[in-house]
Figure 1 (cartoon, rainbow, N blue to C red):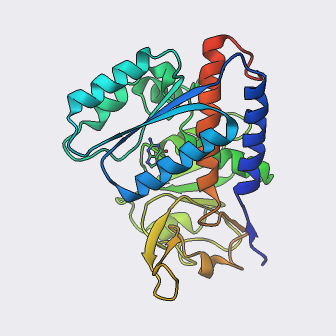
Figure 2: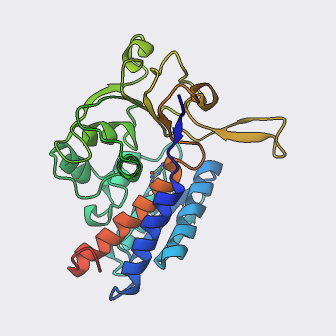
Length: 295
Ligand code: GUN
């Protein structure tokens, strides 16, 4: 069986071009503020990608890089200022936050109308209610990617492995909604799932979002399944110039010729997340300015 690679880059490029065009006709630039606390190397890389994306589509953007020693009060003060800043339409607090910072409190302090990550309880609640405002970027990007490649979810059995608030939980909810890109039968698996392979191996679609390198292989994924790999893990690779390489949460090599389709790592889901962040920021601005969404 030939395994089709579901590449994110062409879809991301199309979304970027659409946003760029809308920005060129908009009354003002959408503005995104990113808050990065601490020195997590992976977060620093993600934030740089977000900055580059903003540059590419012509957004106003600011990144607040705070030391790991920043107090919770200082973070909350910064967010209050960003909530009041008319030039800022979207606020993203990069996760994870350092130990000792109450993540829930920080995410709840973001104005729900500027919560382009969709992590505020009000936005998560709207998602549960089936009436989402901001859809979290990675789940939104996964649905867009599957739709682009003509992979319908309606009626499919989908196993989502991972229950994080960033990916697994919102994606499971979205896929179960009665809408064009959902209507699937969803099983959310996690570290407490007994005999994971028995659940995932019969699924039409498996989404791996657990942050464990190459954890799922041919035993966990049925022949002909569609595989969405959300993981971005750096592992040792002595044969590479840098001595490391990026791998996903599935064993991509073993799945070639076994799965019907697979998102590559890197270059699959990752580019879609940034594209959806920019789209959400555009939507925040368009809503505030009373535009119809097309600029
Ligand atoms: N850390 C890993 N993924 C994400 C994301 O999508 N948003 C934020 N804010 N932090 C993250």
